[in-house]
Image 1: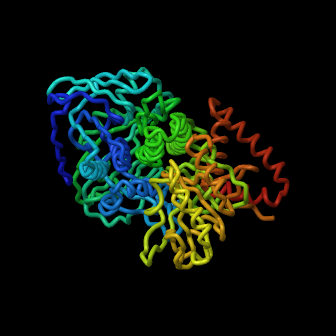
Image 2 (image 1 turned 60 degrees about the vertical axis):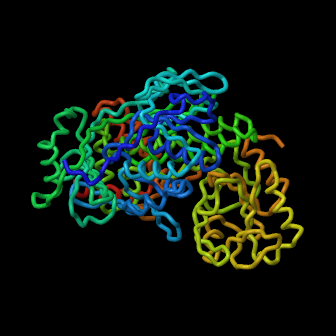
Image 3 (image 1 turned 120 degrees about the vertical axis):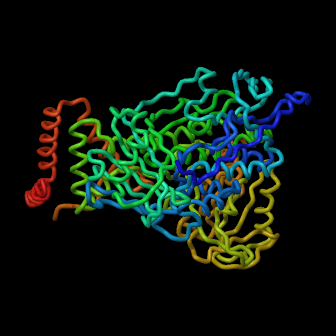
Length: 557
Length: 74
């Protein structure tokens, strides 16, 4: 088969434990150097927490696998320093089209409004994301990435865990205060710890083909129900980087995966779809089934589960890798505060609570999509086809067509870290929501809001004119930086102007912040390091801000 | 009032962050209503649903319009 991608193998380096170095205990060890484990490693290392990453392999993922990376994930990747290479290489898209038999019945736009830095989605083969993350990881001096280091046993104790790790040089022992488990759907650590993961297997099989061809298909997601070229089943088409197209064919449970993977069986399916004339080459083929399940709890003492190790969803909706990267974004700032002794370890319970909530939303949406795409009974199929038939002419039925509800960040409305509103606000920026982006200016320079918010607690205070802020008020704002957990206060103003005491000013010239956050003069948002809203008020009150910070970090005042 | 053909589903007191959620909530409930039934039982359930909902709507002109659309291209 053709290859548009050169798989590099990363060098194995004998670990210090096997080179005579003195044995030491590490603050954080991460198992698994996939997209999620690497995201956790980069975020922690960047924030000053040294990490060791263990991976049993020495290359990136084979085949395209996780293809769609959502806007929110790109915003997280931006803070990790890998957003740009992903977006530059990937194919950006916002529009999805759904066909029933020969006709388009429904389309959606993931980003109906302008003025966001990132598109609704990019398509990018997983190996590129991993490659960019590894490149970034290698730039960080406190990130120790160890290939060909396979964990063969784990012994958790109350304060950490001891691992036995196998390398080409034999087995060594490694102790850590915290263990982050990112070793994927078939998590070896989860198995070694005898932890359950419950859910259901879907009785269906899908063929994935990565096809290289020159085609002028628009960069959109195309989904077919019961198309003439693959009757009775569904087909999904995505354009990826390097003119690689990803095609998913639903096969049904009876299909023989080994037979279906053979090029002589795959090629006719693709020819039926593309027509006989188009030239293409097969790059990678796989047959998959899937499960929808999650662990009851993502934290077990000092062992913290992230990504597919903790939860798995059907692929319809791109909620796998996207939710895994959002797990790490939720976890890392909390873990850092706990390691530094600035928050109690109960803060990590809220990692599990918040990401279980998100996982349940992902499971619900991906299960609903699966039930629509692969109806389980004759009546389900009849109702599904009735909705698709009506969808051609009627908007109400288009709203029922479900070919995948694509990954959006969970709004963590139930989190105990949120401070409930005491005033009325319009819009969706409720406590628990991931912030919307907005175009901004600072010192005459254009930037995107999400580029300069996050990684620490921040309070955004909306003012009409920064030069009218009096010095005493400005000193109160500045004093919040001096606490054990600092809060940087930044003014957001529709007009430029210099504020006293060197306060930063974000200029909301296009009024998108004002619109999206329903902001008026005085409106104050307390933002978590992961860019989720912790609290908001109609007027700044230092006491209320401090109380909300304590709440958002599981501290008591 | 003519037959409503734009999305119209919602649950009182529920806050939606995604436009598709109320429709998906309804669809799941509908499929769940048919779970583990034979085809014949399912047809009966659907017929009962039509009668119940028709009575709730009440306006015969609206019902005739819906019946018309439902029969098209079958």
